[in-house]
Image 1 (cartoon, rainbow, N blue to C red):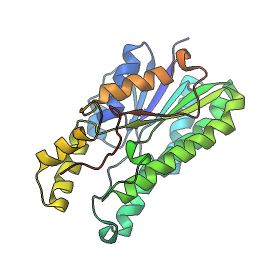
Image 2 (cartoon, rainbow, N blue to C red):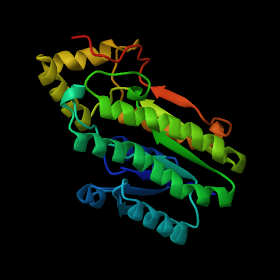
Image 3 (cartoon, rainbow, N blue to C red):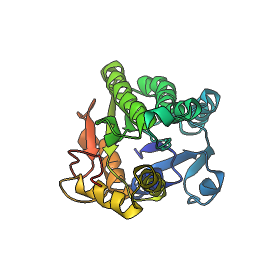
Image 4 (cartoon, rainbow, N blue to C red):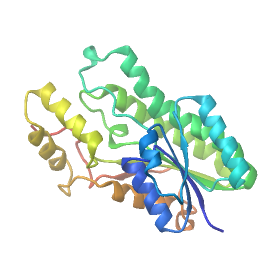
Amino acid sequence: MTQRVLITAGANGIGLAMAEAFSDAGAQVWIADIDAAALAAAPDAWRRSELDASDEKQVAGLFDKIAADWGGLDVLCANAGVAGPTAGIEQVDLADWRRCIAVNLEGAFLTAKHVAPMMRRQGGGSIVFTSSTAGLYGYPNRAPYCAAKWGVIGLMKTVAMELGPHGVRANAICPGAVEGPRMEGVLEREAAAKGTTRDAIYSGYAAGSSMRSWVTAADVAGMAVFLGSDAARLISGQVIAVDGHTENPDPKV
């Protein structure tokens, strides 16, 4: 049977790479994203929905549509996220904190909440959460993002325990520093906060990993395809870093 796969934030960055990788593996792909222009540019073969993952009414409506059109879902990639503010804890605005938590953590919760009955009824499925190495380490100037990504791991562990008896697996991928527009913004903000250059921060991220390398979106996507496959049928409740082995993520600058 052809896999049916939903990827939130699937029109850009890591999500787009996941969609491409699953499509290349022969899956039916449905992407949901808040970026209408990016959705419109996606391949015609993919199903597409505009979605704010932090809005429960929209999330519930999306899963109702998936149930009506596909009859079920084999893989959910709960990938929606925002970088959040880059600032010391005393400079973080409460509204920015709440938006970061809403998208990164509440968005993951809502998609898991609404896919759970569908996967339970069909007797199986795989939920792949996108966390971050920021969910494994404290990280200066990224308090909202770290808090949200740590929360995603706790959520995943609970979902794995609750749904495992019904044949549903849940795992979390923790990407390291991923090349792309979102991290470029982080680099610039961190450079400004630390009074140094973008290039110095960039080099510091690579120096923090044993493989001295940044990660590509395709690296993360490959892990998502594996976790959604039968090859990972007994892998559940796991936190898997795709980061070139990051021991200390604080850039050396």
